[in-house]
Length: 165
Image (cartoon, rainbow, N blue to C red):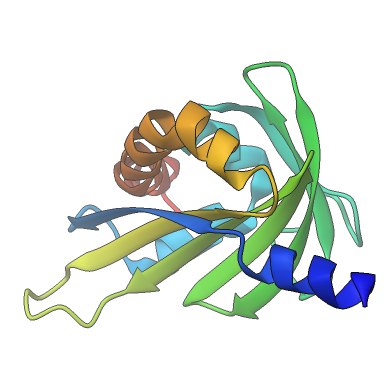
């Protein structure tokens, strides 16, 4: 019936993916992980954020995120969005989703120190946009998304090194 047509329409909506990657030797994977877990440092390595924090559990915690945990990001644009952590592999990867009008944005962060170069850590920061208005968001944000993700991959290692994490 009508419900099945709506399900089909939603399932055919495009998903737009973005990714930034940087290999660095400035610090270890565990140093970067600790910076990621401290949401109060997020605005130091993500140029699009004014502030970020946890809203579930201890707001000042720097412990590993938990699936279904919640938080927020306050953008330089003035907008504030709630987020929900949907995947966490401690020391390796985490992701969260943000609901925006007509779409879902998913951001993921991953570490790999399995490089052939001794001491090299690969930082990956990715994002996807899905939902009815995803084509519109893609047109608006694609350039900023790609440059911002690359910037944050480099910047997070610099922050970790400067904080002596």
